[in-house]
Length: 516
Image (cartoon, rainbow, N blue to C red; front, side, top):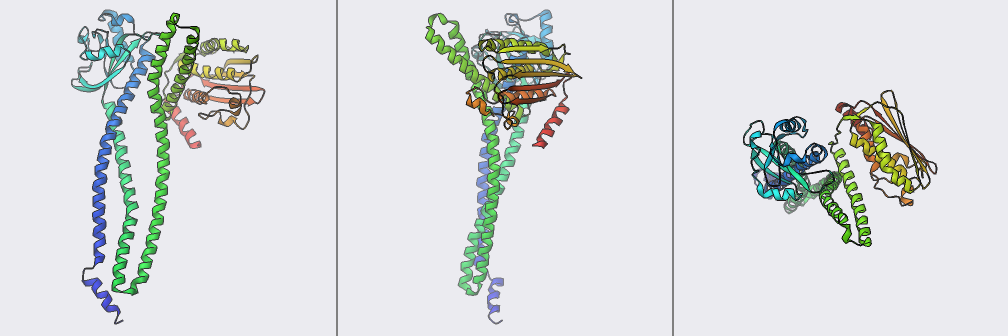
């Protein structure tokens, strides 16, 4: 008892080196926080600009796709030769102000190669010259342009910040623009995307800061614990056991730190998987433009075939065929990216599925005849279907193309269309190689190719059935498959004649997600 009292007295009354480590931890935490905050702000500023640029590119791509798929067929060459007046002016007003489905459109203009505005949502601009004359030459060279500016909307709102997309308009089958289209989209659509990305980035930086602190604190505690242990050993060797206990606690803290690091690495793996999907989508977007340019120049070479030898023409055909195959692959990857992003929409209209079947059969007949495959279509009278004609044509093309690829020379492919109880039934049956029972559940997985396809060197990417399934289910239908090796394969598609609502589609997606 006499020895215990002197040891406890100094701990209570006089400052010792034991009080310094907490100050060291506090200073280190403060300095680290300042450095991380500065780095976080720099990262936030950099990524904010990148996200804004990506959002602008996305909006521009939507405008360009909408122009190519919807407006090009409704614009006339005469709309660009001189200022539009009279009934045609009213028709263009109806087209742009009522039927353009892109969100946030606040202004439109048509102009020709001299920069003269032939149509504008604000009629007083018709006949004037565009303010961006230096960009007109690039647009008519086939290079779309975009810029952020302020303008007056067709409803009279002034000083509105917009993303201005300048898009060349071409006639079908021609690479030379007949005019150009300006779409002004309210910049708030881009700002919302940027704001959401900024919020996520701030959250990620906050979590990273917290994890870093959680990782550093056990190490700091270990170092300060060892300093305290040395001081205690100098005063009294009797506290050695307590020092050992402190080391044990530090080891436990290190084990907890390792567990946290493992959890963090798992999160990073998930993030890398998401970044991989984004990378594939981004690369696909970037590949489409050069591929389109390559195919355009190939077409020019082939049109001027008189100056080429037969061997050179053969080379051009090989390049054209492979560039077309790569362009189709890029299109499939972009389509899957839309599905993953929840941006896959269909354009509903009355569709005569029998006519779609006939067109697909007619397009595939040269391939069938070259391989002596009997391609037969059997169609009953069926009611019209409310759906997306282009996407349904893609379904038919994928199924018939698959059937022909997997059917040997001299075989047979049957395409049957019938209807029953408000649903259209489509069946594609072949006498091809067939698929093993074990591989059939995997056929609709992306990039999956059967062992028979690999063994027989049958070309393909493994994306066709994945895309087909997504289109069919987006129409509220379902797709099934039966196959037997060496006998053939039958694919059945059932689609309701009435289009599903968005709520039905969302409910279907939720059920499928829950099943996984």
